[in-house]
Image (cartoon, rainbow, N blue to C red):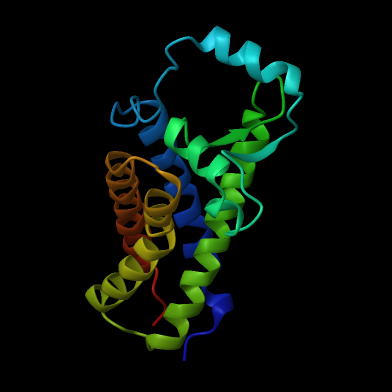
Length: 186
């Protein structure tokens, strides 16, 4: 059995490379540029929301406290009239890019530790590159990719955005698998 401690270098190196790949995907490549659309009258929407003094969090409209509320005619009318949606409100001010980038890197490290744990329990020392690559890429793709599918099913995330995120996850999985396969202990 391979010890988890023997994976410190592949965990760190794969997190660095995935972080760089993510930066390239989101800042340079064009495929996510149209994931979010502008509101037809953004200023009016902002003016309508500002007096509500919304704190950071997730909101939905219409809002129902229970399934029983959804049976009420006045609530059904709100759904029929629309809009129906989910809103995420962030703190006012410029986004904390440094903090978010650091948290993203920590997330990649955590995923790397989980991947290393699974690999250490399923692959023997000295396993060949392709066997390591197969296990690591599959588990990594699942870790990075599949959560977005529920966002499409339940929260209306466009399927085109989901497909692009699944592609991004595949890139991260292939990079991670390559690093682990290359540095797999004998």
